[in-house]
Image (cartoon, rainbow, N blue to C red; front, side):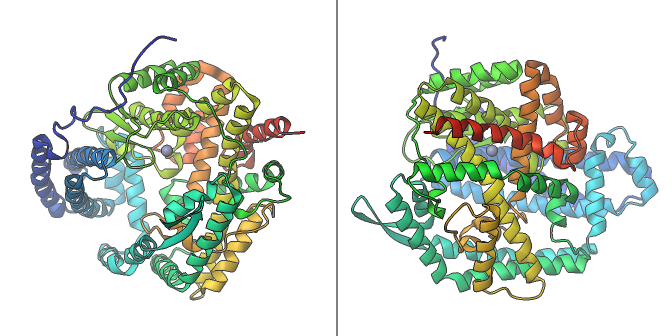
Length: 598
Ligand SMILES: [Zn+2]
């Protein structure tokens, strides 16, 4: 291995010098604000086109708009980085509100433009799509048009959107306010601690089963105490959503989430169908895990607990070399790209206090660069996270040649490149493990993820669809929500757990997110979709590289059915496609069972 020393602190000065005091950023924001005022006026004055001669005008407005959006995103990305690197940077929070406002103003103006454009007469519209500058945006433009046609009139939609501030999103905010004020008292190592629910949740993977049990019971009790409040927040935000759907004439509650993810119901059904058929190996895994923990059956609070700790430690440079070496086996371009990211300070990895927990990757569209945030402390799971975030950065890099409007991929394909990159490293780590114990720990980590996607997310999906059906007939009380949750968990985990978490409907934030409905199945989709790409790459090695890049470039300009057909030659409305990804996870189970057999 070559001796290197990559920077562990990122370079943000290339974007705007001087952090949250940056004068460059100040100028950028002021200029953006001025330009926003001028473009918002143009959007407001714009009227539904009546002739193909207006194609040039439409194209110019789109260009001007998406360029401004990039300016807003550039500032937003910079501020996200400032906030994450130092949680006490209050100036960054002030800047954040400024950008949030810019982006809301822009969003509203752009939406009204979209609405008016979408009303264009069919003949003119078809001619627009043949215009040399608009042709490449065909998919996105048709999507705007379809959405507008399926909605109510512009005035009615505007009314809904203004009522939703206090009548819909407010329920989600109220949920956050209540949860933010909740605390749980637990005793860990003889010391009593007052924890936020987020901190308490982290203790559910504590190595000591007594701690886990105690935390689980205390958490369940505190959610129970507030269950009538949460039954209100959930029922009312769901009621608002259902009423809007009803007025628009949509009877399937999944219509909106499916549209957002550019996928068909058949695809979703095929995915869950395949998963349901192949749960047995994961049930076997859960029973083996119970055995290793000295139990007949796992309790709910054992699900996140490891049976082994991985003891391997890698320095940051070693971690980087490990990633680069294994990326190279699949994609020399991705390896070269990642090397640049390591060398040129794209990554903030230093282990120091004051940083926000977790990891992310954010793009700076005007500079065509990304920045990765994480805290690297040398574990194999850190290396996997780093690879994951590099995958996100690589996705942005692959999208560089396409129009900015064709880069906005949906949640279900957002994790394609990241999961792919993470899989490469996770598999390599299992193979490279020095001891059997390390190997077991790494495999278990991978399998925990399969259980999360195939069982936990499945239970959330089952609960949510059933809840929305019942909600159509009126308020669903907390007692019934508990029942629905318990049933969904037992079903999704095939009764392989002894206890459930009936309060899950209240403690999982995802059910209360109003920005996006059904914040669950896209995770499972993304995981399995990415696994089948990985399976293909395993067969073809570096020969697959060009096809992989071509696939990434199409992630935001066609339906997922077309994407899979074009680049994988696969019909994802059929269970057979999904079974291929599941097959890889079943191999992990087989290996795990063998390694842990007595
Ligand atoms: Zn990710």
